[in-house]
Length: 234
Ligand SMILES: Nc1ncnc2c1ncn2[C@@H]1O[C@H](COP(=O)(O)OP(=O)(O)OP(=O)(O)O)[C@@H](O)[C@H]1O
Ligand SMILES: [Mg+2]
Image (cartoon, rainbow, N blue to C red; front, side, top):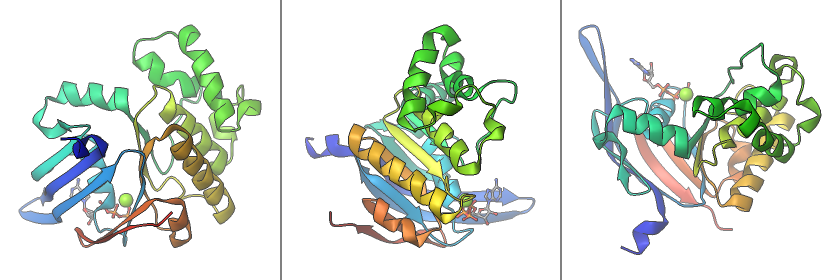
């Protein structure tokens, strides 16, 4: 179907129940939505409503109890664990709220790490890391240690690292959650620029309503259900 080609992510009837001891708690109660290619989707909602759980299910890390996640036409939870790991590494970049760094490596070497994990040498992948560090405006810091940087600077580096293997999708869980307003807005405008420039699909969680303008779609979640999705007029 022609239309389906424009769909990046389809979330279909996703439910999630956690068992803790004797008790089962259902966190996601049947989630359905679609994200089109090139969209910058913001997933918003109160603390504990299940946003991170849903992102982990889309990322292929946490299995849904029911339902499907279709990314680029691939039903990721009907594939093997190895298939998902490979898919994740090749096509998805992830930015957490607080990045983890290898302390003994420089900023640019940390950006290059996903390439090394994928089997390349530093020698092969450093030129790509150098392009990306420039894209995020951090080239002056290439030889520093990541933990010497401010929170906002670290998140720019985390974005560069997430872009290293040319993902077609970026998933970010509150990447601005630990930043002040100014650093948060700077990261958002960088993400919005990259979204436009490369038609890169982004799905991110935020708590900050003042950031809604940066997204092209707002998905509003309450108590494990989608209450509305607002497509912003451009
Ligand atoms: N592995 C787990 N086992 C049991 N319960 C879990 C597990 N992971 C998450 N939960 C529960 O699921 C609910 C939703 O958690 P989740 O982290 O998805 O919420 P959230 O919307 O991301 O919240 P926040 O905005 O605070 O990050 C919470 O009540 C949490 O305690
Ligand atoms: Mg969360």
